[in-house]
Length: 212
Image 1 (tube, rainbow, N blue to C red):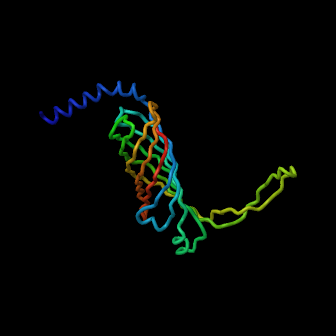
Image 2 (image 1 turned 30 degrees about the horizontal axis):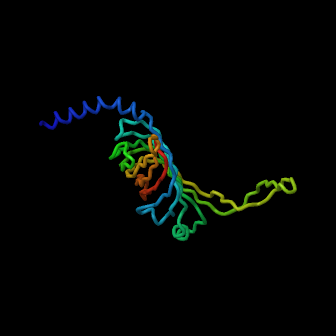
């Protein structure tokens, strides 16, 4: 059979089945998760491992495909090696991103389904340099029933640099179904690359959460 004819038949079949699939699955998709962020590449010696938060909303195009708009936040402290080399008392790197990501599930609606995902979007990277200081706060003593001032350790920002860049991501994971519920547990690892200069920012968040 001619390849073009075969592809056209598959497209028509998918279009015919999509309304039924969306009725069964529900058209709206969502996710929320958190986890650990591992720096990779040239930036690995500059920051420590950190944390990430991830959430998204999108549409289901059937049991095998959805398209998600996702927000991801990542936070990593500067490494001791980098601080010592540059005589920096402290600091951190934070990344905010908004990306569009298709999700292709290999096993559809089965109990365990591997998937691949990836996409492109906007990334904001902020590097802050901090030094230790103290801050005055008000503390309530429930025994005496009084408020009193106290000094506590804090970090003062002495320098900050923010850059907005485009970037892309790619990754894979597994969905684990909860019985007949649409909710699923997911676990994934995803590589993010941001075109910052002179050093490209590369991180790999490992995230666990719930999707529906």
